[in-house]
Length: 583
Ligand code: ADP
Ligand code: MG
Image (cartoon, rainbow, N blue to C red):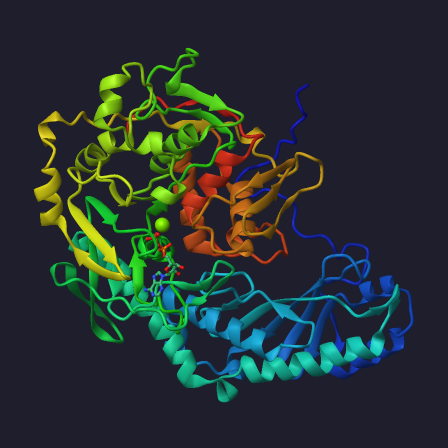
């Protein structure tokens, strides 16, 4: 019944990439661009497998091309190329990529420029969408060297090599794109500067939040709604954001100077308003405010603290030994709620578990939208309280203020359909016709303010220690960590459903989550400690710290989404709970 587990050292798992073994060495220097072109033409009509002989380094005009892996047939995942442009050739001004934030931004800019320049060639670079994440696809190194990781389906006619097309792609299209996009002399310098300063300013705004007692900031003029559910670009003709006077703050930025907008204060914030007036759109903007956005996105200067985590109901998810006593008292089944597991949670228990898990992973701000919540875990009105004595659920409304006062965890809630939170909220924001006003005083007139003395302290919860052998990407022998889409992670023997994990940015970040999960050193420590170590490794080493030989495109994940994936991994087992049960 028990699966045999491969034991392996956790800190440095996985062998180095040996895909080149027995073939031309992926590290060897093979020749120049003409030699590569000649070789590819020679291969025209040969069996597809002969492409394998391309592995190694080719000295191109102004860059090194490394053929890192070659697909075995035309239908396999694309081949992987690395382009290295020496600092002197790239010629980037040092100020453009000085420090980790600018380096990430400069990399993001160049990746997008390269993607544009590669358009129509079949060569691909994982440049990302509206968020500017640290990605494996392109990095500007500390000395100004530019390294890009590309994917290319090598051209074939059936199972034969299309050598002339391949020569065109690798020795004409690629050098042209590299020349256009990765050299400062031909770059759109104004756009590059704008990109980098925008990202830097967003970071500065985010860094300023805690010192000002804010959890988020929405700049005046921001455009929050998206073009559509499947198009993350700004909605054309949207009503731009304007802060209400009472919540207007001015924050400083290094490049733009002072920026005004709405500061969302710490504590309990309620967003109310009629249906379709823009409540969820505002919350969603705060959700993605943990990331920086590209110029023109509309949310460039909408930022939220890095520890903002959105929580929702997600029935049918698995829950593994979570201490949900804060929200679920004695169950009729007699199941212990201090150590609660289920293969398939209900809406309410899933939301209760996700809330505790978010706290366990270090969330400092919770975002909750009525649209995606289980009503019975959020509220219980007076009539029901009077009628039903045996109710195991302790609604969030009873916990929200103690959670802030006792644990310092703020909440931002969208709640249009119930007035239950009005008397617990520190700040009430009204959305009407997409316009924001603050109506805290009016809410007090209507609902009063619930006596804080009557609040029950937010209970601590037990910290889980996972069994590292159960979090095994090799569970089916070969290492399996991949993500075809944002909401679906393949990890070991599991297919992990992450569709309800709202703050995952894209499929590459989901891949990053999987690789981080494989990298996690869970042995004998509470999850939060393992996540701290992961963050240290990522700060020090970037995407390479968790790749362990994987050539897959990855974006650096947050600790919160890594924890969310572990929490949804059905194979994962909890070995026990940490001695010190408080956070
Ligand atoms: P609610 O949560 O209050 O029901 P939503 O946030 O879902 O409302 O918004 C309803 C619709 O209004 C969505 O289609 C959204 O794109 C659009 N919308 C939201 N904010 C704006 C805005 N500032 N300008 C124009 N359209 C907007
Ligand atoms: Mg809504």
